[in-house]
Every structure is written in C-alpha cells, then in structure tokens.
Length: 40
Image 1 (cartoon, rainbow, N blue to C red):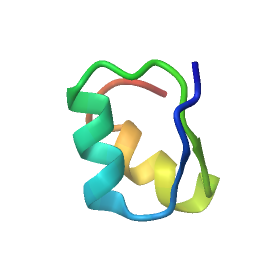
Image 2: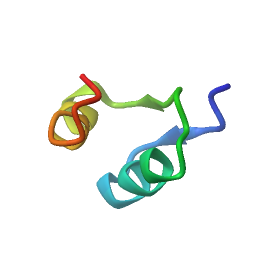
Image 3: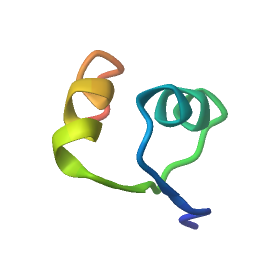
Image 4: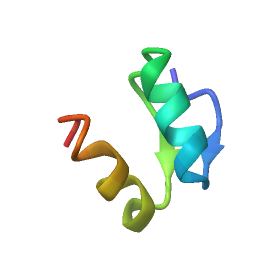
C-alpha cells in the first residue's frame, strides 16, 4: 500500500520508521533517506 506521496525527508524517515513498505516520492530525495536505512 502506498499511503501518499512524501516530498519531505523528515516525513519519509517517519513513514519508513512506521514500517510503510511502499512510498511514492521524488527519487532524488528518497535515495539519500533510504540508503542509510538500507532500503535501497
């Protein structure tokens, strides 16, 4: 399930922490957020 589009790094981190496994986002913003979380 993709709950919504996140275009803010803090929001991306929060939904990742909540366990959301689908995220619609700007890849240029998401990759730096997701890589430290080992989600890439």
